[in-house]
Length: 232
Ligand code: FES
Image 1: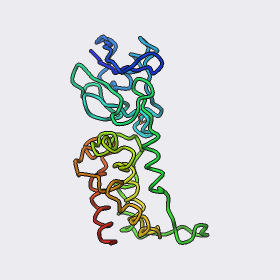
Image 2: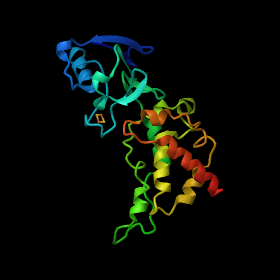
Image 3: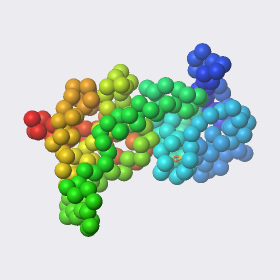
């Protein structure tokens, strides 16, 4: 099986280039994930760099672009991929080395939406209660693992990475705006009422197609835009 992997070492290379690697059929098992294949390739070439941690689709650290689609390598079955398998770093952010990108801009946008609850009483003696219906509204909004697959698949983010907050940050913003326990929704919406931060989203929906957790950031952004307009 052939793998064409993008390589870049800032200390020796002027730009990224492709390198082919091969695994024999005997190296491959039917239930193998792409991350397992990358480990096998790294045994051939220890200089190949990529991030990973949990290996179970939870930590979100092994996002990469595989055959043109962002995904998590640890939950992508090798058998689902067409050969040759082309692996690149996720697009739109600077490359640190090989498949490792600099996520700082992504995290900066996440921090900007203040992704934490602002309750009426910040040191309560009892839980901040919600009705089952209020809690249900958060389903599909809180499960994001910040892998970056959505934001780095978004053309609006590629064009304006420093100004457009991107799908992941806006999904998080929506999650706190709709939380019945948060008292800052109005101010949050005012802060997001910006042609670049939020309205730069053109509803392309690459984000939703790329999310490995099956979330729908595109729909969350449209909801957010509607609430911003209503908020005046
Ligand atoms: Fe943690 Fe893939 S290694 S999500």
